[in-house]
Image (tube, rainbow, N blue to C red; front, side):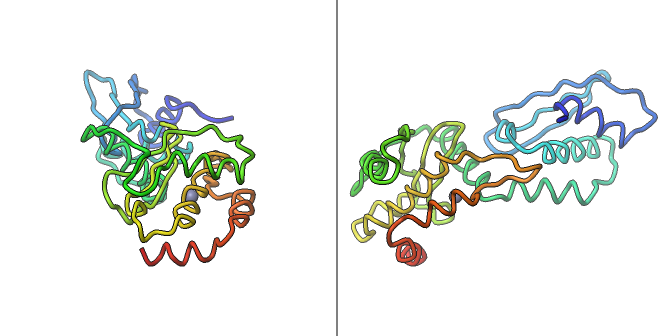
Length: 228
Ligand SMILES: [Zn+2]
């Protein structure tokens, strides 16, 4: 049985303050520009806003957030296990990439485009879809990133059904198959959505990895990626 968000907060409140009467909670997921969570006490009610980027976070992460916020509110020490669980989740590759993308979309309003200076991402997707997926994948929004970030080369954002590829690949000197490998990897994320395995996120599962190996010149592409 999995606990709902109010249940998680009630349980964590009980842990922290076993004898105090249970207050009323007002919980909401909120569109902060970044990962952010706030807690306030007003007229005996506890008001909590959790970043909507964490809406799909595993229960253990939500539990950690509940603990941290309540401990903060009542000036109690934060349990190291909860602090570590939360930190680990926020630092995870996929979440930081998502944060980056959303910041970009919510912050500066720019028009996303699949057409780059050299490569058209829609064409790359359609071509790979035919070659490797029998044309079965629905094309998400394909877009070049607005900057030339090297820390996230590409990523699939399920919330916005978007594949974002770093603009550093939109250059003449980048061989097409290297860009294709990157898009292929993100297409596998489309094919194998992130599933919960217990409380652990299984991001590149065995099926994912096996299928990734089917990409021709995989090792060569990875090698070139490191030099860009
Ligand atoms: Zn990946």
